[in-house]
Amino acid sequence: MRLLVATAVPPERDAVARAFGASGTPEETALPGVVLLRTPGADVLAAGVGPA
Image (spheres, rainbow, N blue to C red):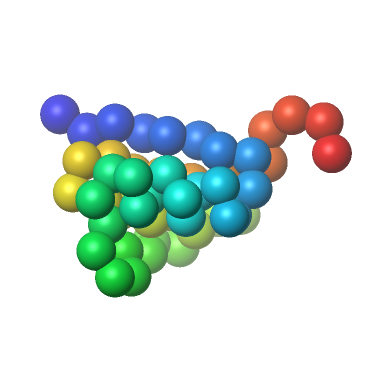
């Protein structure tokens, strides 16, 4: 099972990816409008949620 985590901004996404065990640079997958980071236990993206 994989977990999808959506954060508000890229720096937060990167911190969450490190917390899920991303060593070095996690695998990046470009999707329309976002970059998805793949870690051993989760996929993490910055979705821009919340007020700006």
